[in-house]
Each structure stands twice: as structure tokens, then as C-alpha cells.
Image (cartoon, rainbow, N blue to C red; front, top):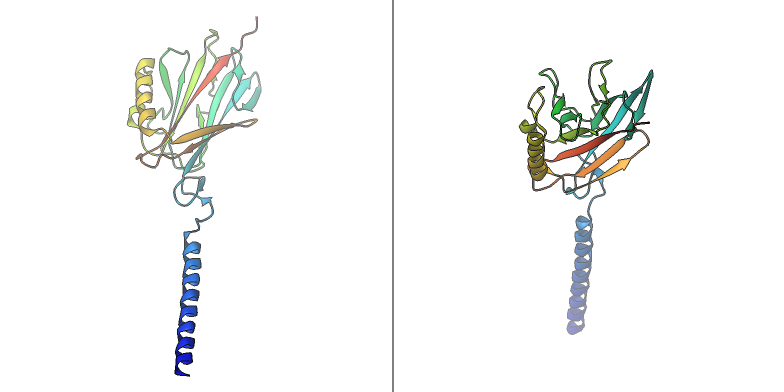
Length: 223
């Protein structure tokens, strides 16, 4: 009888240990389940606390005669005026530039003066030129013009050269360094009817990320 009691006690202990192991394994699996994607501090999704995406939305407002038309990207005619609108989903140091030709000097559209505030707030919209009634005009020479947009998570002193035009070679050299040091891990562009959205994954091992967009303004001439 004593042997049977000992065997029963041993069996009960073994069953208890098995149940404890099963319970502990289930709790461990629950703890290891990655959390669902949730809005990240920089505007888009963060999955498991690792992936961070930045978003930059931009559009052009074109003036044709007395009409003002919002467009994403497109071809323009000589004499058209246009303005650039951008909005970052994160606190961004923004820099906007214009060149009348592919090899011509580069002019700063923003920040063009000490009164221009940088960085922009999250989802703040910026228009350049900023003064009401000011437009950039197609030069009518048949050569391509270009806008350059930069939105960065830190200040980029190399792009703060003031209102004086900068030689294209110098500008390209500065921009190349920024792209090499602060380019995102990957990025994609989504074209919509009246705007373009640029998604960029923040590089985890870099101190900052910069979104760089080169936007050619092709002049469409009619003979």
C-alpha cells in the first residue's frame, strides 16, 4: 500500500511539472509575438520598433493666364508661372532650389532669408515662392529647368549658402555629399492626380536621413 501511495504521489508530481512546462512555454510565445504596426514618431509605420518611414508630399501650382492649377508633375509652356508646395510628415529641415538650365547657377527658394523658419513642423505646408503673387516663370529658351527639394531630420549647413546664386558644379558637389552620408535605406514615390508622395525608410545606423528630390520642369514648346 505504501508503494502505491508513493507511485501516486510521483505521478502527481510529474503531471504537475508537465502542466507547468506547457504554461511557461505558452507565456513565452505570447511575449515573443511582435506588436502590430503603430504610428511612429516620424510620421508613418513602426513595426516592432525597428522600421521608421518618413513621408514628404509635394505638388506644383501652375499659373496659366488667370487660372491657377494644382498638378503633381508635368510639362509646362513658356510663360507659365509655377509655385512649389511641400509638406513633411516629420519635423524637417527643408531646402528648396531652382535652376533655370541644367548647367546654370542654382538659386535658393527656401530658406531665402533670415526670416524663413527652419525646421518645419510636422505636416506644416511650405510654399515657394512664399510671397503672394510671386511666381517662378519658365524662361522661354527651350532648355530644361529644375527644382531640387531636400527634407532632412537635421540641419544641413552645406545647403545654407544664402540668396546669392551658387555655381552648379559647387551645388552638385555639396548635394552628392549629403546623398552619400544621409540617404535613406530605401524609398519609393507615389504619383497621385495633384500631388506626389515620397516614402523613405530611415537609415538606422546613420545620425540623420535626408530625402532628396530632383524635379525637372520640361518646357513644352509649340511651333
